[in-house]
Amino acid sequence: MHKPRKDNSEALAAFITKKAEIDTMLERLAALSAAHFNVDPETLHWGHVGDLGFYASQLRRITDSAFREGEHAE
Image (tube, rainbow, N blue to C red; front, side):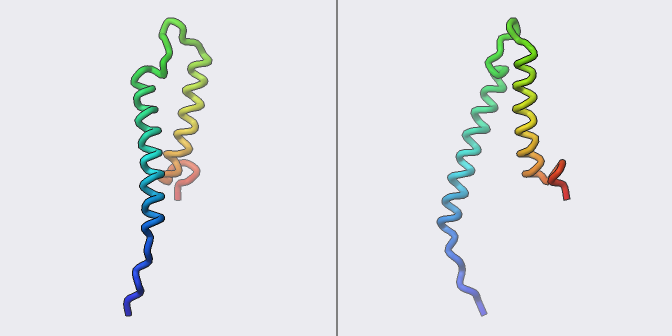
């Protein structure tokens, strides 16, 4: 017997919307990184390093989850 195929069009649309949201954020982050996070080397200080450390830690949480690494490793 065949089960009727479940209509997942709403879930698919929501998935595509969230993916586009993530793609936009990644593009913005890549552009900001290419611009050295808008930090002038002449005025760079440890606060900027701390900011990047915070960004890196947040991105690590995301990549660990997405790739099942770190605390998300199986």
